[in-house]
Image (cartoon, rainbow, N blue to C red; front, side, top):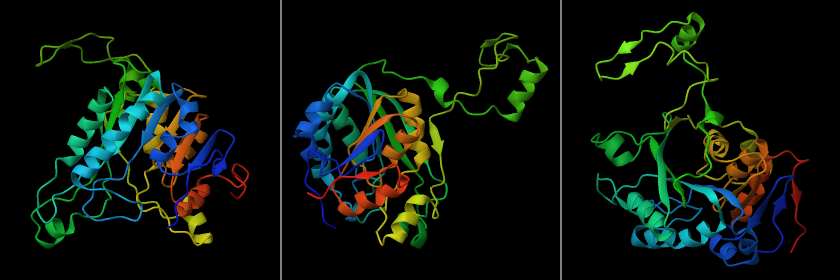
Length: 310
């Protein structure tokens, strides 16, 4: 898997964004990063997880992972606008050879936030009920653990009040709530919790319900444009693809049309495609030639303009 070195020219562009070849460390020390300082509204990404098994896309373990991730934090913070956000998905990890969970992902999150003096605005859970049972030894063979079906997503910012609006991510009302709104009546009064609910408290139609911080998406797609493009071009798909619904959720929540979204670990460039679909500007970084080429499948052929050979 050949990797690219950074260039002033992106590997490809679209109407709203660019994907650059290279590692994020190389990009952060280049003029590209200097041009972005103070301009990014959202850094949204899923860095390689601290897994015990080495993956093709590269991942570190143990204290090396902790030091690496925290070391990126100050430079990434410099890219943000004053009211910008960083959102990181950090998956779970298990101790090697033991049916016990590692605290490394949590320590990595704390080290990252402390290194850049970031506030942790909220914790989210990305729940994939269709995920295959793992770790296999403890779940399938010895049957002493339950399958691991979620990853943590952490929303951070340099400020206590970054740009955010939950009205952009409202969900449809339940059938019961829709009926209440139609009927115009509600069982008001004092609750066992001692909260007092007024007659009109729940009878205002706000266009939808405020979602919780558990995002459930079954990541089982096998026939989408991205995978089809990879098959047609003989490319290996990225093995750790984030569902587009998750990227879209945070882009809607934390940015407006025209804002700039950056993904330092693009992979299959889910973030760039989601930003493009929502009329946000974007910039992504990915070192693998093969993953860069495959990520073009997330856009139509008329959207992508490839850079000339270097």
